[in-house]
Image (tube, rainbow, N blue to C red; front, side, top):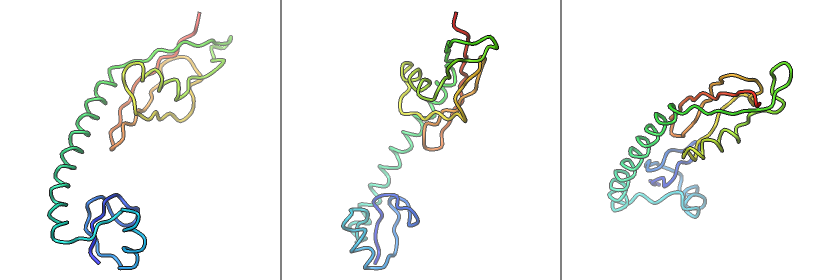
Length: 146
């Protein structure tokens, strides 16, 4: 049975792919969940139009994410924290604190990627993931609180 995937399905294909599937699997499992559409001539024509619109939206989204990634590279976040005698932090700077600071600067919906929480003074690189394979790196400066 020839079908059109309406969503990305693991181990099967990506959205808008046309696949040949066993009839039982298609009718009993995928069709009731709304994951596929039977590939008739009319459905294939609709697919071509929808795919073009979707690709344009996807392209615009990726351009916007790239623009945001370039803008975020210009930002340098400053954090101050209490330190001990050996200049080590009593606490730490976590992903949530960085995310909150970025939200205040107008960047939402990003993922912060740090290996472990920041527990020392100085400058620390932090990777920001925007999704769709777009990443940027910013510098976090941690200084001692007076």
